[in-house]
Image 1 (cartoon, rainbow, N blue to C red):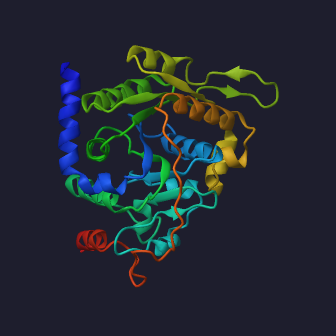
Image 2: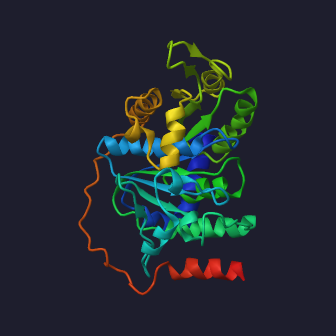
Image 3: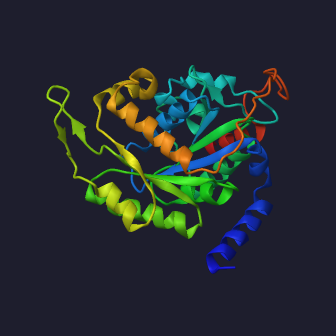
Length: 316
């Protein structure tokens, strides 16, 4: 057995013992994919939301876990209002919110009083809350679970990569700017250090096509994402062009693959979703069981008790 394989076996055994509840919570999830970037501002969350929506359009059961503790923006991009946190019932776990398009979503934003409430937690506490979320969310049957990691290589992304047993892969998001590519390389190296498989790299904001004349411009440089992928010997999954419709759709809380399915960005995202599918081992599609909403729940409680106690204690 090679040294790298020994490390993977060691990590697998360690995670199996340390993270049993997390593994149990994801028993019926076919593919678990984390999306990471080296820095903020590259459109990572937009990519997460629209890849999830693209696979939902293909008939998959898809969930999103927003693990960005300080800047949770998934609920806004899929049209979830903060007041919808009241439906997070369960004394035996937390049910994710289901969007109008059928995506299952869970985010720290949904347990906070308002959208403007700052989250000022220390590193160790953030890691503990993330692990509690991972072990408490009742995803039930999913074909895909996307985890939107915060930018960088700090406590939160490291906790996720170490905690999810059987993580099927990481997708790295960058933009063509030199500084983004440089910082993104650290995220790639972090994933490799933790033996997390990398499915590939996506270059967001890769180009701009004039809607009047059709001329394509490379506003931030050309081919840097593909070059970075070649440097690290990881697949290049594709580029997503700059598109004003993408921002408009996000502001309305509707993924662009639904709002503007014929747009260049939507078509690029659908193509990338197909590329990801080709890079995963084939597995039988999940069969969703019919469950009453009250199954296993105490209707007088709105959040998992242990998680709520953690939050209340920190607020005091």
